[in-house]
Image 1 (tube, rainbow, N blue to C red):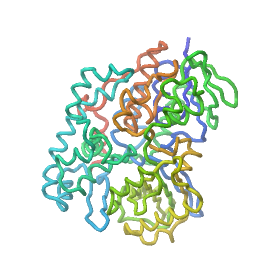
Image 2 (cartoon, helix red, strand yellow):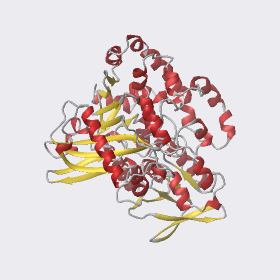
Image 3 (cartoon, rainbow, N blue to C red):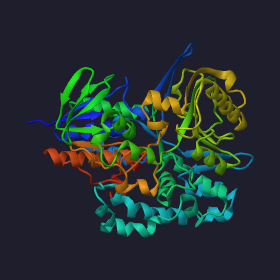
Image 4 (cartoon, rainbow, N blue to C red):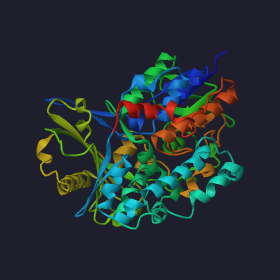
Length: 527
C-alpha cells in the first residue's frame, strides 16, 4: 500500500524531497501558500510598457550543482537537460570604496594576478589557501552527509577526525590571517559568509570552504534565473506523480500525543504517514505547533536564538544596458567592520553600507525586454527585533534613496533616471509577506552553538512523524547544503515508513572527476 507524505512548502528543500520521496514510492502532496514554487529561490516579475522583467528573489547563482544533479539522476532525469547552467568566467568584481578592484575567478593564475595588484605576498599564498580548504572540505564532507540526532554524534570518528582542520575557535577572518595579510584580500575571500547572514569576524572558520568551493568548482548562472531550476524541479516532481496544491496555506498540524498524523488547510483535513516541513522553521513552529507540544524548541528558547541578518532589496528594471558592469559585483564600504556592528546591533541600518548587485542581463539578456536590463541590489541590514529599527514608509523611502546613492558611489550615476520597474523588500516585508521569522532571510545563524546537533534535527526531535528540510535545519543554509539536507531527511523518512531506500552516495568530492556533471558543464561552457 502506498504511504502518504505531505510536504509543507515548495522551496528548494521541499522540491528535492518531493522528487526523492516520489521516486522512493511515496504518494506525495506539496502544499504551498504562494502562487509559485521556489520560496526565496523563486522569481520576481515586473511589468513595464517595454515588457516584463524577471529577477531572482534571493539566491542569484548556483554553486556546486553536483548534488542536485545526483538527485535528478537518482530520479531517472538529467539536470543538464532540464536547465542550462552557464559557467561564469569571472565570478565577481569586488570594488573597494576609494580603493582597488579585485576580480574573482576560477582561473587561479588570473586570480593571483588580480590579488597581486593589492598584495603580491597574498597572491602567492592562494595555492596554500586552496590546498588547506580542499583538505577541510574532504574532512567535513561525511559530517555534511549524515544526520545529527544526539550529542553522541559529535563524538563519532568522522567528526573527531575533522576537528583539527575545522579550527573551531577561530573566525573566518582570523583563519584567513594564516594566509593573507591585507584585510582587503581577506574580505575578498570571506564576504561569502554573508551567504549565511553572518560577519566574517564572527562566522566559524569552517566556512572558508565557501570561497574555496567557488574557486575550485566555479559558479553558474541558470538561464532564466534560479527560479528556472525550481520550476524544473517542480516539473520533474509532477511527472513523477507529485500533486501540488498552490495558494493553499497550511493552518495546523494534526497531532495525536506526540505524533503528527496530517495537516489542515482551508480546504479541509489531510491525513498522512509523514510530514516534511520546508516552511521557515522558526515561523512555522510558532504558527503551526502549540508551544506546549514543543520541548526543545519552545517559544521561549526560540526567542533566545541567534538569528542571521536580513536584507534590504531593490529590484530595478532599467532602460538601457550595463555592458561594463559585471554579472556579480560586491561594493565594499570603507568601514566594512562598522557595517557589521550596525547590522548586529540592529538599532539602525548601515549608514554607509556595502552592497551586492547583480547585472544578470550581461549573461542572460532575455530576463529583460529588448534594450533593457535587470538590476538586483542587496544591502545587508539587521533583522527585525523588539526595540530595533522600524521600517516605516519614511524609513523605507530614506533607505531607498541611500541605496541609490551608493549605486552612484559605485559608478552608476544615472540609474534612478532609467528606472522602468521597481520593487522594494525590507526586513518587515520578508517577515509579513514571505513568512520569514524576524525577516532573518538566512535563518538561524551558523554559530557553533547552533550547528550540527544543536541545529533543528532532520528527524524533528519534538514531534514524531515530522522531518525538516531547508536552511533552518542541519546541515544549514545555501542551495547545495539544502539539497544535501533534503537527501538526509528523505532517507530517514523512507527508512522509517518502509519506502525504497534513498541513495546518498556519489556526491561532493568522492566521485571520479570524469563522471562529474560539474566538469561536463565546464567543458560545455568553458572559462
